[in-house]
Amino acid sequence: MSASLTLGAPDHLDKLVTLVTAFHEEAGIKMTDEARRRGLAPLLDGIPHGAVYLIGPPRAAIGYVVICFGWSVEFGGLDAIIDELYVRPGVRGRGVASEALLALPRALAQGGLRAVHLEVDRSNASAVKLYTRAGFKPRDQYMLMSRTL
Image (cartoon, rainbow, N blue to C red; front, side, top):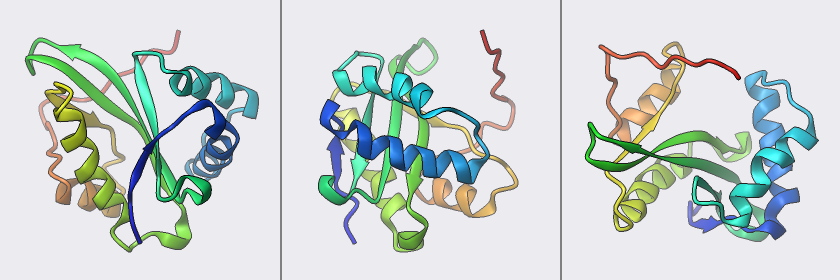
């Protein structure tokens, strides 16, 4: 199974809403489809703050990854956070997510990206293992904190 990445475009919105809904249901994230559309559409329209990639063949995507861009003095320039990564349950365990996590940073580095970050539930051992295999390392002295506005 291939984890080829395709940059999301406006015509992928309905397909992505379906995938995002599946992820949100699995993760316990409560949101309306309209709110999901509002969160995805600008990324698909090409705003410079982030991008959505479909994983697998665009006509029958098996997952997606959302990446949001920022700037870091510490890392010396453009950085990004993987906001969401999802692979359909039926194809998990076949290396698809690992392949995507290795391909995405390599491709983005060519565009000047200096670092990629992500957030993971420490108790999710399989996710921690996946991200570690893909080269991500914990920053134990730091913790992500959020404030909803």
